[in-house]
Amino acid sequence: MNVNNLAMKFESFKNIIKNHSYLSLEDNKSLSIEYVREVLLLEENVIKLRLAKNTVKIIGLDLSMTNFSYDGVKIFGSIESVTFE
Picture 1 (cartoon, helix red, strand yellow):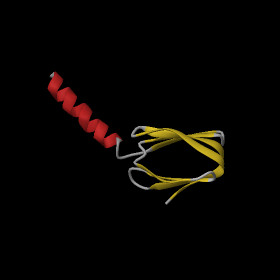
Picture 2 (cartoon, rainbow, N blue to C red):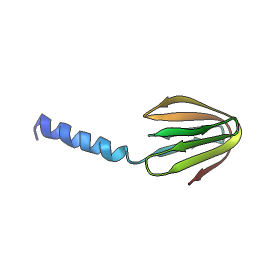
Picture 3 (tube, rainbow, N blue to C red):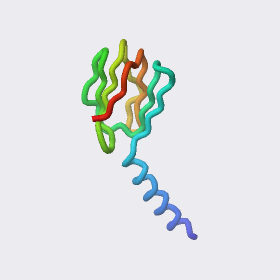
Picture 4 (cartoon, rainbow, N blue to C red):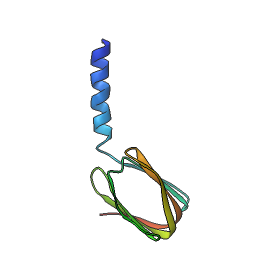
């Protein structure tokens, strides 16, 4: 397999991954979400995000968000619930 074929397969793989979002909840204090498309709502007790295939709503107390980029966000606070819409 030459380098060009390998590069094209890698780009194809990256595009497939970008159609999915990954969530990682650590206790109820931290939530990492990869491949966030848009912040729809950002309030102290509610955060709503558009992902690749759906929308996620995080409800909690004293929520804050960092590291917003195409790769994802990290949410801190007392997370009560995570729902998909």
